[in-house]
Image (cartoon, one colour):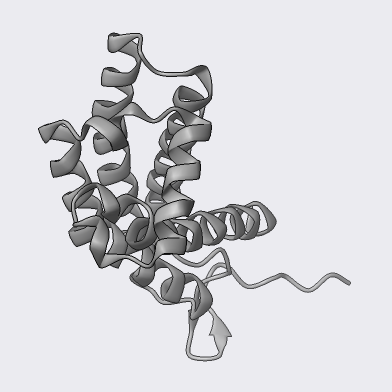
Length: 168
């Protein structure tokens, strides 16, 4: 179980780092004036929109703008906390990971519902948001697993009943 936990934590670390970078650089352009960003970042967002055909970033419907604000105000700080929690093996990581996962699944469900229901989205855009749904589910499940994938300890010794028995 320990190795699987480390692999999941590694995958989540990459996802949290990606979210940490893309939310303020790309997603925030849906809610803030374009003049707030350097030209290179605006071009990066435009190339993303052109390649993925993300009509939500162009049309900016009210529900999408609200979800972007949720991402910036709530999920982005949680991604930062989760990066620190993974790297520093903090005991609260499971809690913040669970909260992030549930929030991500909730907001991505609304976006996927629009993308699939409108039939305007490209297959690539739907697949990309399905990955976000997977990351949210993985974070939620990881949040339900005890923080450490190690043997619980009391002080410097293993907790009673979990120590290895000596073999003769």
